[in-house]
Length: 265
Image (cartoon, rainbow, N blue to C red; front, side, top):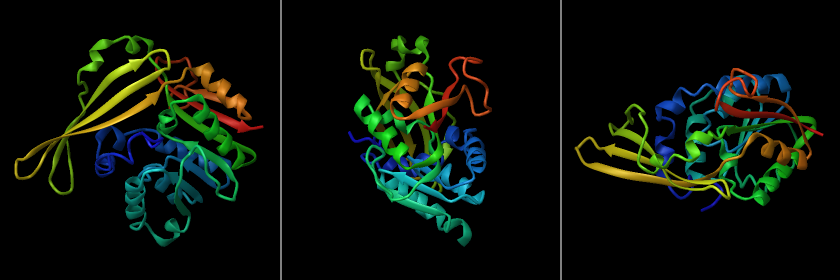
């Protein structure tokens, strides 16, 4: 499996992505847009997907370069962007590229990795390659926002998660398909900190036909100081660690999020 987290292999996920209720209500967009405003320069978003964060950033008057490895996700982003005013479209550039190794020939005031695509990099070498590549694309004093989930040690040992779980509400696609999504952790590699994850989509078509689609992918979880050491090795100085998009300091809630703001040194 490539570093896209299965989004290249399972193209059906791109169709559903913007309709999944937890993604539609996720509170991170305003955080990333405000951080982009503060940096007063162009933005690089690695793992831009369907443009969930990228398009609102461009609407806020900010030039942004979106990078992703999935053709299907990028196509949806382009389709959504085509519905925006011309001045918004002019602020966006999209490219298919691997976040571990890319060369854009320009520098940015801010780089962001929203909603955890960094955790699809399952080796330290891949993680270092990504961070060093981003470092090389930042202007002097530029910043990186690295968005991870904070591992909950109570969950890591919970074998019940090998069965399907999740209480997400049903969503309805524009073509009338009704979809319910469930989760499953097929296995945990506790030594290498890798979870074999599944997102299972139960689809009911308008004619009553039913379908079960499974998106399989791996995620490597990182603990706070492990991530800080990676950033330090790649030439970043961690300025803030947040537990949430409301900028609550890390440690004020558990597990919370694990959001780093780091400056290029």
